[in-house]
Image 1: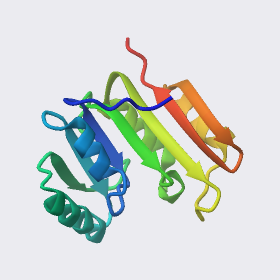
Image 2: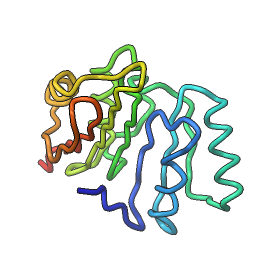
Image 3: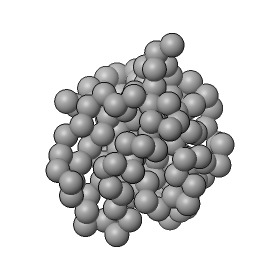
Amino acid sequence: MQLNLKSGMKVLDAGCGPGRLTIPAAKKVSPSGEVTALDIQEEMLTKVKKKAAKERLENIRFLKAGLGDNQLTPNQFDCALLVTVLGEIPNQQAALKEVFHSLKPGGILSITEVIFDPHFQRRKKVAELCESVGFHLKFFVGKPWAYNFLVEKPAN
């Protein structure tokens, strides 16, 4: 199952790093959609800005913040991406709560973990964290060492 990004969607790339997913997502949701590239490191946001300028993408918003800092607007995003980032966040529950509240009802959070990441999070822990803040598992694919969860904010 894919995220099925479409024009007009609003996407959060949380812990965007150098923009490996930000740039393709911005292309997918253009011309009327928007991607928010969130990272705690200014140098990562600078890298994404350079890539976006090179690609002439103007639908990326940049936000220097950490997840859990309450910098996101409630009910703003259709989809959020969290790729090999969760283990780097000190207060994971606060971070997932903020993502939960920033998603529109029915919004999807995609969490990807790969064991080669030094901050790898095990499937059981991620599932429990997601459930504790109100997400419902929509889809899972993978193995114990590399997986992707799609969790959904309930529509009501």
